[in-house]
Every structure is written in C-alpha cells, then in structure tokens.
Length: 171
Image (cartoon, rainbow, N blue to C red; front, side, top):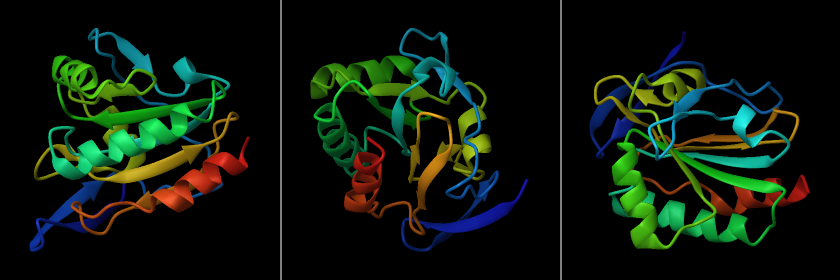
C-alpha cells in the first residue's frame, strides 16, 4: 500500500491510503453497499458497461452535490451502455434521501461506509477523516482504467470535460 498526501480545506495535509491507480491498469473490484444495505460489486454488478466512477467525500456538500448532478445528467444522456457510479462514505439511507430529493434516477450511488473497500482499492480513503477523496475514474467494458484524476485539494472540481470526452470516446 502506498501513501500520498493531499490538502483538505486549504491548509490541512491529509494522507490517502491505497494505490495510485493509472490509465491502462486493470480496475480493482470493490464491494460496497447499495441503498438497500446489500453488497454491490462495483465491476461485477455493472458488467459490460462503460463506467464513470466518481469518488466524493459527501453528497451533502456543495461541490459533491454539483459534481454528482452534472455528471449524472451527462451520463444519462449517453444511453444504456454507460453507467455513472458515485461512491461516498455517506450512509445508504442518506444517499437514497439525496437521490430522491435530487431526482436522480440512473445514477448508482453506493456507500463505502462499512469497511472502506473501495477507498483502499482505489486509493481515495483519507486516513485522518475516514471519508473518500475526490477522484474520477473511467473504466471500460473490459474493466480497464482509461482515465484517472485525483484532485490535489479535496475542495476542487475535477476536470469534467476531459473525463466525459474519454467516456464518450469509448462508445
């Protein structure tokens, strides 16, 4: 396991545990929790789909809300060959409440609260806070990573345009 640091709230240095994944690598499987508190295999349960996986600290923050709404809308317009997955440490019932309030239907929102499997496999778990760091992953239908962006500061927006261009290029 490698260790990296990022900035949180402008001046707090925090540590990310797990690998620094790169394009070209096989995506790791991670079992997280669905809104029904049942196991969901990130790759296995979206088999055959081209995926945009969004790691966020909490859906209850402004940037995470905006990121999830924007990407959900964009990916929904691409059709059934694509899946947009948001993973956070929020509890499943809080995620379900957010989806209902936001009117988001095609987005798969998953929780890593139970044991941090996704955060450790994708290198996004912030050790000091036990929340996920903001990152984007584009994974093709053969489970290979085609694009990765880890943000240097948790409160920055990711490069939406590049991630969406990579995603559309896989169609």
